[in-house]
Length: 338
Image 1: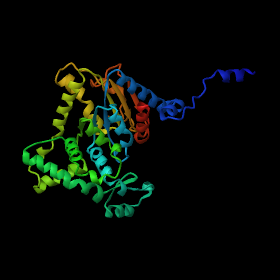
Image 2 (image 1 turned 120 degrees about the horizontal axis):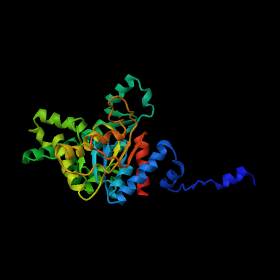
Image 3 (image 1 turned 180 degrees about the vertical axis):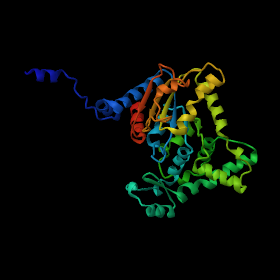
Image 4 (image 1 turned 180 degrees about the horizontal axis):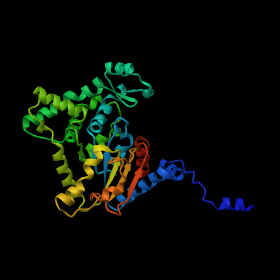
């Protein structure tokens, strides 16, 4: 036998365990961003196995990307314990739930002319990259039901967070007959069942946020206070973190950048620096993003920068996966779920 052949025999062989997503990933994801996927997923599992909790943030159009297909199971199996998302992600899971069959894909969206965009607009199709959300079948289909909840709170002099109205909508059963997907694939329904707190900073920058403002301006609702503000959400998050971190380390799994990630990660410096309390740093950090680091960029900043801001500790497990979250997040969820 030649020396080359002997050397080849000594090399580790591929497992070829392709019967599971986890097996395929472990066999093929070996370098660069692929390797970071495994490292981040293994650290996620270790964090939970050590009694930790995981806080997840959702930016971008993850609900329209139907991330609920994998995220819902993560929530049901206790792999996610709190969420911060854009108002769009909060509402678009409901939109997809009741109007999925009326959505339209536009595979050639990069080639659309302004005239073709106008044609979509005239049909009431709101485009999100390659997917169009139908105005009448999705947004207007739930407007009356959510308005009823806002007005009920208004009459009773009560105020709720945006996600609490979504939970009320789900629990009321008023839209159950309109479901067009298996409710097990709705991450919001899963979160509702487990009573997860959901924070939506900048909620006014969403379709339902716009609709709420319109109803206040028309006099259908007497006060903006019917929906709790972002400042109240920060205070609620601080209380949640303070309580949960007493007995558990809390990890931070960030999908995308923007306000969904920027808002909640600040709760630790709020507690440590502004309230002068001794609380734990975030105990795990992973970000899936295609943002690049540039002058003053926060979404693209490397995790080390967060150390100086009292968000992460020097020994906090830190991972950045520079890739498309619609591809990577479901793979990590499948890996964590085994």
